Image 1: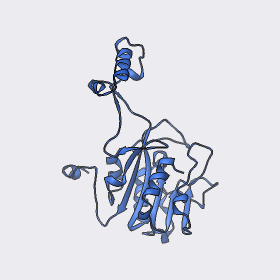
Image 2: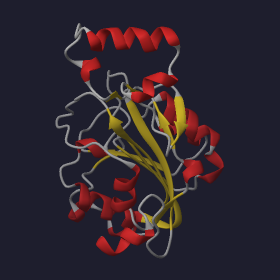
Image 3: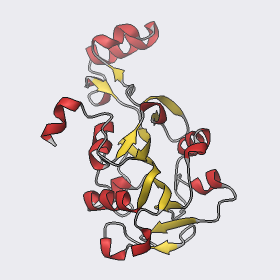
Image 4: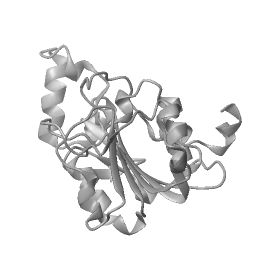
Length: 231
């Protein structure tokens, strides 16, 4: 499944996608994630949707955390892999990321959506939140160009990947409009709210949408070159 913003950004960059196509986490449920990236690939016949649960949208039940379940013929096979709103629910995320690498052909595209800030949502587990650097670390053989990555809500693409929005409740309040600035200062001064507005900053509920191309050697975009030796 995918969010509206994921589908929208995918449509804008659909010329990058190749066949065959694999969608990870393809089960369609009654949740607010009811869209499928299949719509981006209209007319494509070599499209496979996998999930650990059977149901609508699932062509094959398969767990990518279990290397033994992956067909041998899938090695370096897929030209495009969709993985949207899935990685936060994965127990062995490191094995899964290596397996995604193994089944993507050189030059193939990994298109994924992960939460940076999101409410707890157990399907059946909710384990992780992500930064751009964490995706670099999990997928070192993929080049994630900044122009192909975005910060987004469920429905809207918000900003560039290195411009994650926050409501600064400290000195940054001076940059806000007058009504908002003094309303928040009032709440803080008189401690009328002892939860949200007593913090340094607030973040909206946002995802990271990231597009990477598989290369022949490690490639980092968000991890500094000077820090690579620490990995």
